[in-house]
Image 1 (cartoon, rainbow, N blue to C red):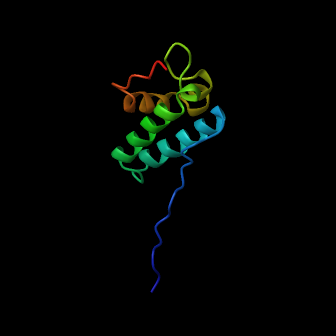
Image 2: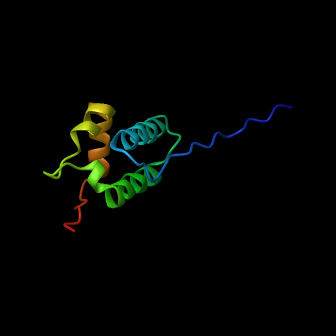
Image 3: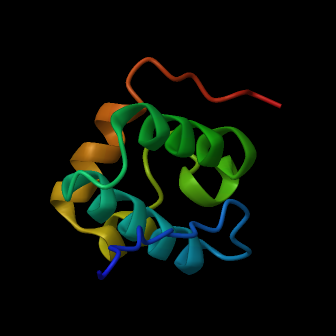
Length: 92
């Protein structure tokens, strides 16, 4: 009898660069779209990135960093912005 193994996807919660953050956002978004990551965990991950890596995720104007937007694409960008709805970045 062959057992089906569940794949555990490791998403790096503390990326060191903007490009690595974008890569992790792509991975998380693709898992969410493929229904392998539920909405609660996806939203928690996006909010974690916003809270602890806001300088990488956001530009000075408060919108998503242009590098992140460029790397993740427009559809994923819309999904990330939807998850960030109601989030207010800290001023300090």
